[in-house]
Image: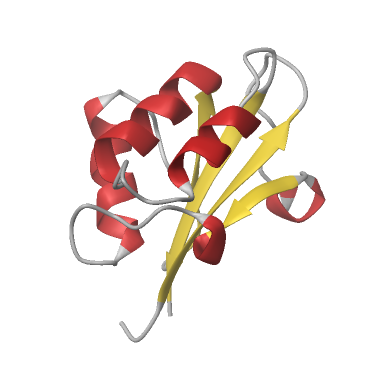
Amino acid sequence: MTYSSCWIREYPGPERPQWTWLGFDAPKIAWTDSLPDLKSPPYWPPDVRAWAERHGLEPEWVDNCWFEVCCTAEQLRDFLRTACRSDSPKFAPLLDCISDDKRYILGAEEF
């Protein structure tokens, strides 16, 4: 692993999306540089995967280094509170962007 990234995208509708390239079409609300720092060393995939597993969310693997997880607004807020540093100046503005009437895709990759 030389680099890892994480992103948050929103998608419409209550149903689990069709995964084929959904990440390219869904509006992005945050990318690695706009996310608060992780509480653990800055390597996103293990933290995202462990959080998803604890919540019974199934990661969808796009390839062997890239996966995405569907989650509700409440679950996404929980991820941010669990994994990210709340003292980051990026934390509160990101929480404010999350809307209860939308669902989200939390993605991570390494390369």
